Length: 295
Image (cartoon, rainbow, N blue to C red; front, side):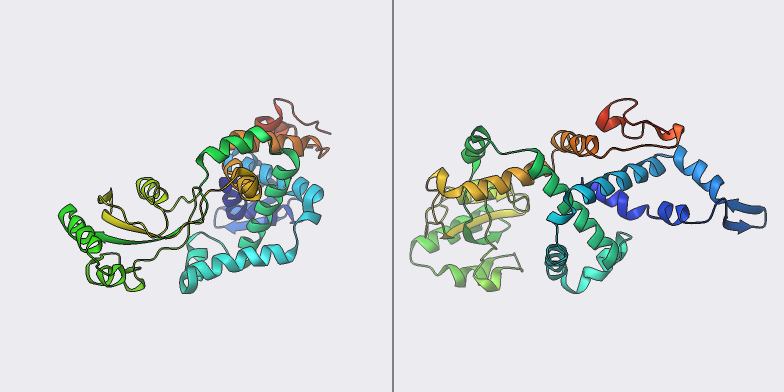
């Protein structure tokens, strides 16, 4: 669906062209003019043009069926989250991706509409929850000291075991410039986090509150000494139903097989008619061949 949103954002030129009067001129050159009909005929032959039409149809039916589930406030909240995350570089990142604040908000809205469609068309079962529970870890907070050599990490562990102060040692030895002056503290994370190395997470989740790894943890960045700052414990599955559901929906949103089935259900409810015979199978990937009538 991320690809769908990017395509939707990057190919809105087709929509502009479609708004022109019948067979009006889109552009002029020394060699002659390019009409709307010429442009349309070329675009509908291209994968980019077909992708754009797919996205427009999907967005229309999502809006019709789930528009009341996504408020302007929810879109703004999500937008501000990204804006805060990227800070002063946010505008540059939008520009690099061919987006404006307005088009990015449209992408966010489409994403939230898609999420609403997923939740309406695929319910979480007890079996789903039990499977997710096996890999579930609650949000924990750790601090780490990163060094280049294993021997240095072993020396730090030895110092800590003999009463050394983790915060002071992080400031003195850690090569992680983002955390060394914060006692090595990282943002809280759980099992669904994708930004941290899997080996690092596995070692961290084994620690009880206050514990320190007794052997260096090797990742592509070097050797880590990890301290568990806050670990609430896993507890019972029934205490974490909401988090498990959110993790499942997040995972399914990134699963093309799941999302294809969801979008297919949405499209079937959309009463779609394709009026151009050349494009009548544009939704075949979701609904099979001859998926919509042409009139």
